[in-house]
Image 1 (tube, protein in one colour):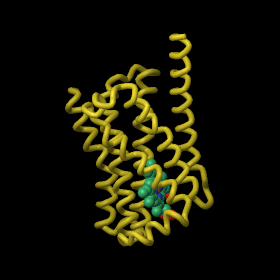
Image 2 (spheres, rainbow, N blue to C red; image 1 turned 30 degrees about the horizontal axis):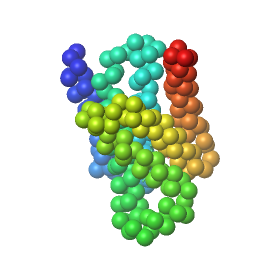
Image 3 (cartoon, protein in one colour; image 1 turned 90 degrees about the vertical axis):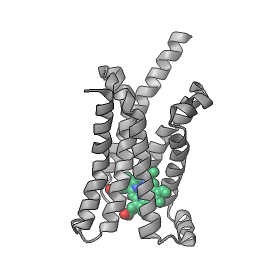
Image 4 (tube, protein in one colour; image 1 turned 180 degrees about the horizontal axis):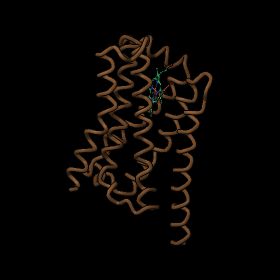
Length: 197
Ligand code: HEM
């Protein structure tokens, strides 16, 4: 399969969670609280895409899956897309675009504060994700900026952890995956430093 076809097919596949949600919404299949389902599912997908984008380098390293390299940017942008939809749903359907209520909520509910921090940190990564910006920033600075993604992942998972009331299994799974991915990165970084020492 050509790289273009591979990327094009995945572009459509990655849009499917939203299509399924919209289908469910218009066919009244999202249960008694469709707004909650929409908000929660888009948040989950934002976090999943973030983890997928972080997994690409380790998968290339461990299994030689280099065919994944060209889709990393698209996966990262899908994370930003789902996070944006998630945030817009909150502003629109939860807060009815009332800026005062939104600010009060950010101050009063720590899990919202953490979600907002995580979303704001995603913006510079999305804006600088293209080759032109990479060139302009220089590879080292670009890499440093983009290592923010681990912090964003932790903040996203913490945001989830803080809002669950009983069963913390799901957010803990996300946190465990992030810790493993961060561990692999630190291990590689440490080894590189040792070699160049
Ligand atoms: C402006 C930023 C954000 C706001 C205002 C926000 C708000 C919310 C709200 C209101 C909920 C649902 C809470 C409930 O139903 O009780 C939620 C859930 C969630 N959010 Fe966010 N969020 C933001 C950013 C993010 C980001 C950047 C991520 C991921 C990287 C994320 C991931 C999640 C997850 C995983 C859930 C839980 C889903 C579940 O319960 O199954 N959120 N968020």
